[in-house]
Image (cartoon, rainbow, N blue to C red; front, side):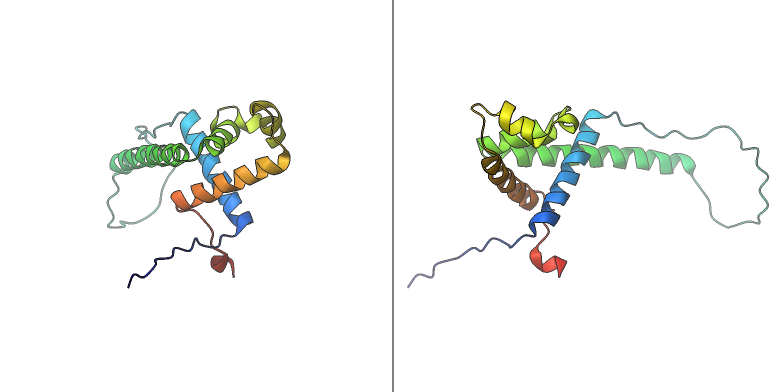
Length: 154
């Protein structure tokens, strides 16, 4: 006697998940297209008079800055890699939509209308665009582990 396995996809809060995915994609663009400025240690003495006693805490400014630079760079590389990998797994139409609307360096200046009426060949309707976008967001949210489940909001 065989038991049939069933897999139920989680119920997702659409608005909250869409906001989270868009924030993630915006962060991707920032990391991808802006240059990371490394912090540097200050080597000049401050002119402020400081009145305090010993705190028994040693401060190593250089190591804190080095750790920050390495961690922040690794974090941004990891976010870029994970995002691109998740987008590459999407079906062709969903992948095209996400790349054109959210991942390009010009995406800040594009509207949904520009994408569904000018980028798609042949152009698609607004309803079709919304369906494709939601499917892509759903898959990305689950792949990137940023989905907001309906039970989380309550």
